[in-house]
Image (cartoon, rainbow, N blue to C red; front, side):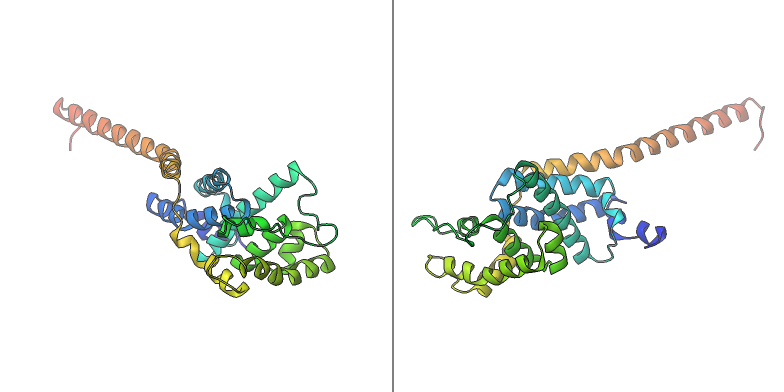
Length: 244
């Protein structure tokens, strides 16, 4: 992609104006929060992911990506934050995404805790990430292999086991979905109902002020300088030193 194309991509134009910045924050906030929450079941981590993508957008970090549609912008935002969460998990435990020895064994659901979050957390870590990313965001084989450092055989093994694992958790539960496909459809539409923590609104406003404060100050300086020049010219004209 050429420099001109990159500079006119949505990744760059998202922060060109206050309206564009606010619209981009509104577009990416819920999906990033929802996805991170499904992966980690930690509200603080989900909020941190949204705050981080807000910062990346306001500082034009997404300008390096080839983004020409809102769908690409949304997916890129999710990809960037997922990659950051994976990196953080691996730094704490290099084996966190290893295939379970002896095969995948989901944790049984507690009798009084049948929720979307508890079902996903019952899946082994690698399988939970593979499920969410492939089902919600259509990650392809190449992306999954690179993210989790899997060979073709390991990836095939994990992906082929997912539907039965998920249905094995959903069917005996009190959740209203009894098939893999129905559960996936639910997750895809659920982010529309997600409510972001109130502190993220203040985070967005703070980044907006930081982004546009230098521009506002420059406009004020220019206006003051222009006014000063006009005043000087008027004084000189009154003294007869300059003539209109």
